[in-house]
Image 1: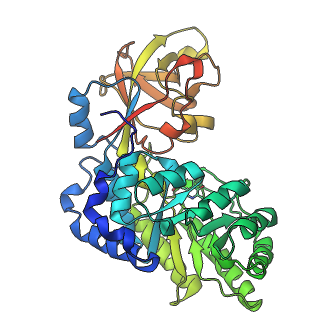
Image 2: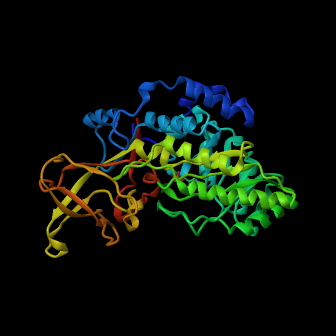
Image 3: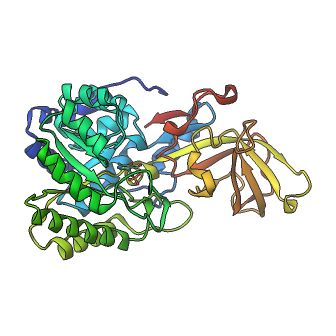
Length: 425
Ligand SMILES: Cc1ncc(COP(=O)(O)O)c(C=O)c1O
């Protein structure tokens, strides 16, 4: 069923978690989840490929085009793999990556916590039975009335990166846990999150001291090394800076208790990426190097690494044309483009793999574009894409590893095209 109606069904497996305390619930239900996940849930295809379940579904399903199909078992497997690889970390799924009801329900049932960016995401989680103690309002840019509304609903953890934001939190969410996001360079990330978020480290010290003086619980530091971060040393670098901040704050009489490492865990697009367990090892080694054996509370906020590999967009070729120029390359126009979910092709940053019915036959270079009348709606011009010469209008294509940051980036009705449809199976 292609629907986005909210359902509570999947919560039944771990239905008791709502009554447990913050400290106990996540660990207990995660242990339960780790125990019940059968090994048969292992990926049925290579990482970032089309799972057996999706392949079988696409054989018979009558879907609109384009449509994203997400295999929720792979979402679960990715979450469990992260939990196993970083056993001391509490996982706050970044809802923005894919807020589908089935995904939120499944992860809630596993005992996940959630990183939310807006009241919409907070309400979504609450409607799925997630207790507010498992929510973090992680956006550093919030309306004061939204902070107040979240506080009224029981949310007690908030991010900030400026004095003005901190003052808002102190005014309307007194006594809450707060953490300060620090700037990162995000070197090596395919989708960097630098500049807009986070303050300079020295400012973080002053802000956290101010937070304490305002009666807030100055809980810790957060950073994000950039999304699709495949350079594992970036976590070490970030943790080294973070431990210096802990020391600087300790010297000012403030003992921080938490490090939030954000996301960065990858999907598998055109090139191989390190395994989740390699991330776990690199992060655990860095934590021990910089914090010794008395580790603070560790939070991670994976989005892409949980849902990216779990989704496939089935789309259709609208036109294959030769127009002279363009090095003789063919233009291939799909019914999905930058405005229908493939926004991360901006600057050709994320390079999706594309499968066609003619794979294995002769190929030639193409320029790939979306269907709209906007000339910015070109997906790949420089990234050396080749597609089979037999490709024609009407062919169905599959765009792999598109479970993250696609439906949410889709315009509502640009050029009269409907938003990207999505189904979870
Ligand atoms: C605060 C925060 N946490 C987590 C994430 C998720 O990052 P990723 O998809 O790289 O795991 C993001 C991404 O924008 C973010 O802004």
